Length: 365
Image 1 (cartoon, helix red, strand yellow):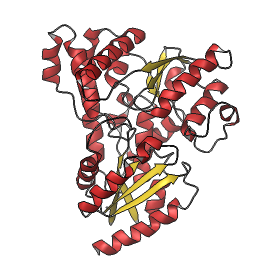
Image 2: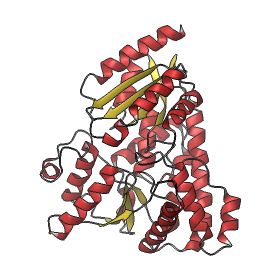
Image 3: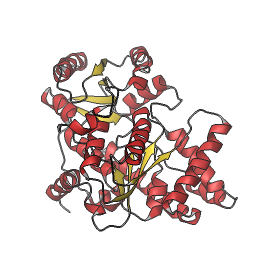
Image 4: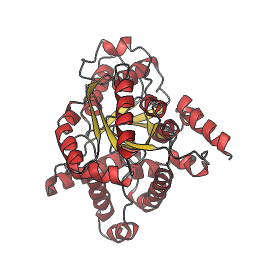
């Protein structure tokens, strides 16, 4: 696969994310962060996050969803109503994000009242409070999800190996980024909406000249590459994203040796997976030091500045904004705080990013 073909492959998967489900093989969709990819891989079925369409109207969904629902969730419900997801057998919603959790209940209620057809909705009831009872709850949730998807515990060791290989692939892609933020955003979204195990290792991305100003984008999941394009137009490049659905969303590798040892105990492998899943979570409901985390991400990206972009509907993330700003200021990392933003970025976000790039460029000149 040459560079031109690789870019075309990414664009095709964004344009036709549901192509793999058309053979009626019982595909699995998911919504939100922290859905265990090991279980999805072990199912042997096609899977991917339900896609959103940033600029399409959502008249039917608007009849049912309050203004507190983000636009991506409206887009998903609108497409569900249109029958876009009818080829899927199941959709798993995450409890670690408020919008995905609430959308699950709306889909279920609309189906029960005959207003909606389509795949069966399930919720993955991950518990993120750092205590043993929450770990036990997550273990139970994993077992229930595996049972619902027909996954046997014996399939997990191989799935863990494949998931770890995917994590290594993602890490290589991240470490090679020097510019061309829009392309990498599209890559991350394609790897979210489809099963990246099928194609990501074959990618050969075009080389690009290193950007003079490297940026980290944190906060809400953006609609598409429009924020990255704003940075590129100003002479900078977003070389890393810090959000719960970004390319690095799978976290570090799960210790395969420990997982194999845990498998010798009854239920030990599921417990190891539950522990890893909780520890790796950066979802809005996760408990961790977000200040230290954002500084670490900025340094790892060698970022000249950080753009914290928060859509106005992301109320949980809004509470984290002061901690992020204080930590970056204390570390001497320039930060642009863009809070209560329109998700489509059709406000003054591009202008604010351009101004911030000029400040960062002046500071490093």
